[in-house]
Image (cartoon, rainbow, N blue to C red; front, side, top):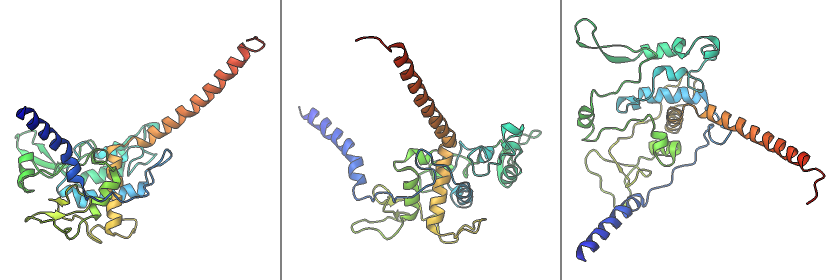
Length: 269
């Protein structure tokens, strides 16, 4: 009997643990992203700014192993150009902006003659490189915890891009009763309030090419939008397909109803 009670108590602690950890955490701020809603679309200028925030700030610790440079030029992407699409016989691999962005990044490789480890300028076919050579190095450089990959982060966290934008703006002095150990920071949107990541953003830390004012809020929302695109790059195509399917179903329902009336016209019940 005692064993059963002990197991039940342990189960209740496991179920209740997340709720206790989340107590006192603020709800993510409401952000009016352009891609929200059934007809929402990504703001290309915002995606370009978000990519720059990721490359100049986030990429120092976080990988995006599921995103290739060529994806930046795909339809709906930050640097999509209709001149480089399947319709023209060229692809994002031929996009000069994508080529330049890739070439500006060094990726690991193997020398074909000596077998030695080398680095070389990336090509559009290469995926975003990891800031660390392996997981052990990532843990060693970050207090024993490897920074998470951001490829799907906007879909993996409850609240999605709103949570990311809020988290990046949520650093501050600890709440009453919260004690921080060395290397820890307080964030009012993080479960438990204590996070190992230091505040990554600061005013004017990134200079935007379009002249947008580089506030922490702007940087946070832009990189959150970019991470949402990375997690769901085909969102616009999916919405367009869904809209087309709805139109088809409405027309089909009308034709079906008209056929029904025609077939049963004059029939007595």
